[in-house]
Each structure stands twice: as C-alpha cells, then as structure tokens.
Length: 319
Image (cartoon, rainbow, N blue to C red; front, side):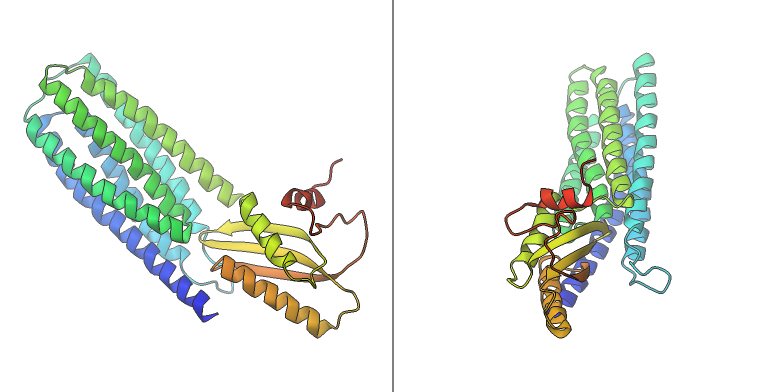
C-alpha cells in the first residue's frame, strides 16, 4: 500500500511539473515568435505566433485543470475530480480549432495580397530555437503521459507535436522565400492550418470518449480478468465494468466463489485480488463483489478458458 501511495505522489509531481513546463515554454515561444514576425512579416511565422498564443492560453487552462483534477475525492465528488482533465481537453480542442481557422484566413489573404519578406535570417534563427524548445517539451510530456496516462497532458502534447511540425515547415518556407519562392509561405500556412484542425478533432474525440466513460482498452480488461482468475479459489468472473477519470482507472468486477466458503475466507480472497489489481494499475479505484458460483447458462460468466470477449458478451448478450 505504501508503494501505491508513493506512486500516486510521484505521478502528481510529474503532472504538476509537466503542466508548469508547458506554460513556461508557451510564454517564451510567444515572445520570441512575436519578435520574429515583427521583423520578417512572414505569414508562416504569424501562423506559428497565433498557434503559440493559443498554446499559452491552453497551457494555462491545462495547468489549472490538472491542479484541480489532482484534488482528492470529497463528500460531493466521491470519484475525485479527474474529469476536469477531459474538460480541459475539450477546451483546448476548441481553442486549437479557432487558431486553425484564423491561420487559414490569414494565409488566403496573403496569397491574394502578397508582400515581400524581410530579415529572414532572424526569423529562421528564432524558429530554430522554437523547434529545440518544443522538441524538449514534447519528449518530456510523452514520458509523463507514459507514467500517468493523463488526458490533459496527452492533449497538450498532441498540439505541441503539431507545433513542432509547423515550425519545421516554417523554416523550410523561410529558406525557400530567401530563394525567391514567396508563394510557398502562404501555401504552407494553409497546409498547417488543415493539420492543426485535424489535431483538434482528435483531441475533441478523445476527451468526449473519456467523459462518456468509455471502457478501458481490451488488453487492460484482459489483464484484470487474468489477475482475478490466477487465484484458484476464483471459479469465474462477470460484470466487469471499467472507465477512466483523469489518471484514475475505475474497475468493478464480480468474483464467483464456492458458495460454501466462509464469509471471512471469501473476504480475504477478494482483498488479495484487489491488492494485485491495484499493484498492476496504480491509483485505481477497485470495487469487487463476491457471488456464489453456480452453473447457470443464462448468467454467462467468464471461465478460465475464455477471453475478455466472452465477458463482454455476458454484459451485452446477443438479441
């Protein structure tokens, strides 16, 4: 149990550091890109500046959402506040969509009214710095997501990946503009706006699925069943229900035990299964129920020889 608490505390620190790093990086990039656009007049740099402005706002919202989501459960929120992360993901997706639309409008305007670019060497240097800073942030965020499975940090990382690709493309556009291919600048900005909009839709869908209590991935459900059935006293399982709220996985499962088993023994077995599930899924909220074993074909429980698909069939039988 001490190990589980230590893991939870470590994950909370990682989430706070990742959210803080995102805000700091966004503000720094906002300042340097504003200078690069002011001296160069590049619409691609303006596109990146607009995206960084949205990033700064989204990162601030994300920072507040993560801190709120990490608050412990209380009398009015018995399952915690984890879904604040999914709400932050929805907010970020809307901001990113707005950024993409603004960028598209600006790029089309620049195609219709082309303007010469200036001091491109400064703009290239600034964008190079942006690439390095963004890459470092993305790598750190992905490491944090691998440890915490945070929806908010994952959403933040996704749009910083789009920023990274955007910055790489802008450097190419600026270099080509130096060679006289000025039309490439707005064309690239249009392509970037489409990609950013697509990324926003991905974040939106992911957040919606979490808010609608989508089941955990099938491999994780199978892992839960395998843990339960690894105990010889557990004769079967049914009614597996799972969902995720922020970083917390909520797991509910019925264990089938010998009906003649003493209550204290059934309780001890249930506690042991719960402990192993918590070890496999740190910060999980686990609720197990004991049922007497019975060979009832209508119950359709999962036995040792069957897979998670059989368990799903027990929840949603064919009509």
